[in-house]
Length: 135
Image (cartoon, rainbow, N blue to C red; front, side):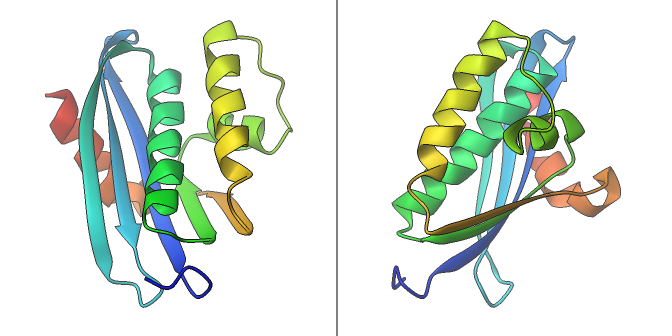
């Protein structure tokens, strides 16, 4: 992919059985033509759902950089993650604050990054990937 022209759309989700419990991330990456080019379904150990959501975003941001893209649109069904990254909610949890700083550092690697909150129904692929890895 040519970096200057590379634009990705990424759907992310985190899952945790037990909260905290066995946790995983799901990431579905689409090219600028809407073709699914990569899926990530990865267990991350024991974590809360919110930590899993942040981990999914970190995986997505890292993958975009690995693929050499400068423009990302990221969709999440986590209102907490979305509003914290946008600066609308304060981060009270120290574990989330660390992940938030990692996210902000990775975001700095992009020319353009847009994050959107969507409903769960619109995030089925990433949800299935996270659920599969948490089993």
